Amino acid sequence: MEPIQLTNAPIHFILTGGTVDSRYAPDKCTVVPRQHSGIPEYLTKVVGLGKEEIRFTEVCMKDSRDITDKEVDKIKTTIENSSLDHFIISHGTYTLSKTAKYLTTHLKRKDVTVILTGSMIPLNNFYPTDAGFNLGFALAQCINSSPGVFVCIFGKKMLPDQVPNLHT
Image (cartoon, rainbow, N blue to C red):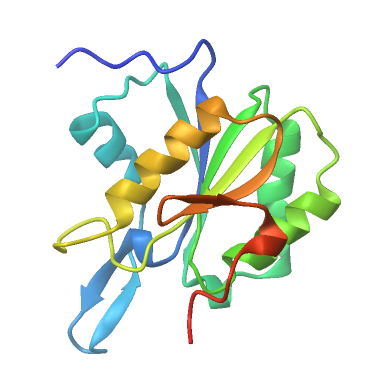
């Protein structure tokens, strides 16, 4: 399959773990973040994006409840130091809006489009899963949105302060 041409400039994916990048751990009877992200392989092999279309930075692979302030600051620094202006952050849903609000307030670059997304069911080895849909929706919104920080999940694009509690 020929690589798909999405935009004139690559999209920078910042990977942090969360359910989207988790695996089932039978000894814990729950999902836990994988050692390394499966999103790059999914986007290149399944979706068909070429390496010239996407860049990846793996900040951490954690449940979002375990992401530290230092790691959130590393996300911000990665965006500020990048030559690119379109970003998608894969993130756990527990603190997705918290990170989005932090970036809205603290990000110095105002020329960037930042989309945070995640899922309730892991991308790999689960069916059905919302992960592929959420990643695709995030890609479409990243390409077609004006600069700003947004959360894209479940087919909705929201400002960080509009995100409802995703866990009850």
